[in-house]
Image (cartoon, rainbow, N blue to C red; front, top):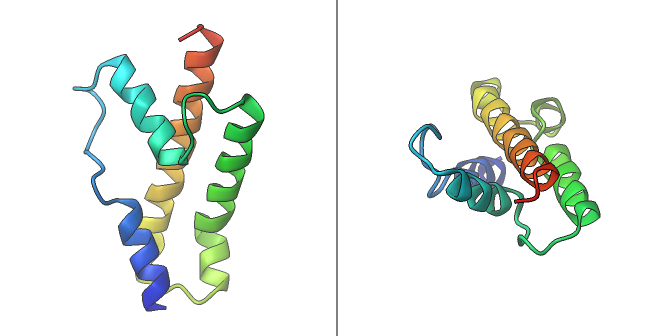
Length: 97
């Protein structure tokens, strides 16, 4: 259980709050960091990283592994962060960034 909590807390290390003060370039760079891939990664590699992270961090899956209910909000925030990062990258790539 302590490992699970550490994993979730570690996911937030160094993460800034909202994105309103970020430039588009910084948002894209941060999105790649969230997914743990480089900007040179293929679309397939990015999708694979996204799916893996969503599977590892999904609140329902973590609850099945014994995560306390009190940590559900943290897991939900992490999945939102992963999903947002994936969306930022997809949008940037469709616009040719």
